[in-house]
Image (cartoon, rainbow, N blue to C red; front, side):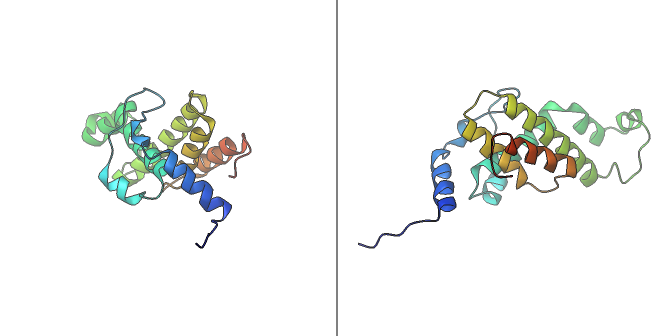
Length: 153
C-alpha cells in the first residue's frame, strides 16, 4: 500500500470542505434568513463552499437588505430623487458593483460580530476575497479582518 501525504494547505482545505459539506444549512448573519442556493454560483464555486456562501450573501443583501437597489433600477423617479449622477454611475454594471462592495463590507462587519465558530467566520470572510469586483476599501477590510486573528490575508 502506497501512502501519499498532501501538502499542509491542501489537507487543511480538504478538511474545511469536508466540514462544511452542509454549508447550506446556514443563513444570513444579519437577519438569520436561510439563503436559497444558486445553481449558477454552485457551479462557479464548486471547490469553495465559503466563496459560494459569500456570493449568495452578497446577492441576498443586494435584494433583501437594500431596497434602493431594486427601486433605483426600476424607477426613474426614484433615481432622480437620489440626486444628480452621471449615466455611467447608473449603468446596471457600475451600480451593481458599487452596491455589491457596500454589501460585502456590511456583511464582513456583520460576520465579525456574529456568534459563529471562529474558523467558519474567517473562512467565510476569506471567501469574499475570491469574488469579483472588490474595490480598495473592500479588499482592505478583508485584509484587516483576517489579520485580526492571525489569519493569512
